[in-house]
Amino acid sequence: AEQALAVGNNDADIRQPAAVVLIRAGHYSHGVELIRRLRTADPYFHNSPVVVNTMAPGLFALGRYDEIVDVTRACVQRVPTSVLCWVAHQEIEWVILRDKRV
Image (cartoon, rainbow, N blue to C red):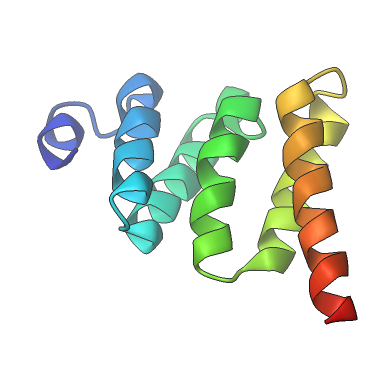
C-alpha cells in the first residue's frame, strides 16, 4: 500500500484500494485517514458508495459509530439508489440500536 501511495498519492484509483488493504490488515486509523483525504481531494468520490463501504469498516473497528452514521447518511442522500449506501446505513443503525438495548 505504501509503495502505491508513493507513486499516486492523489489518485483515487490508488488511494481507495490502498485504504482497503490497510483496513483489512488492521491499520484502521491509517486507512480511514486515506479515505478522509480522498473525500476532501476528490468531490466526485466524496460520498461514493465504494468510499463509504471502505471507510465504514475502519470507523467501526475504531468504535466511531456516530461518524459512520454521518458518512452513510450522506451517501444515501447523495446516491439514493445505491444498495451499498443503504445497506451500510441500515447495518450501523441496527448495531447502534442493539448496543443501546444491551
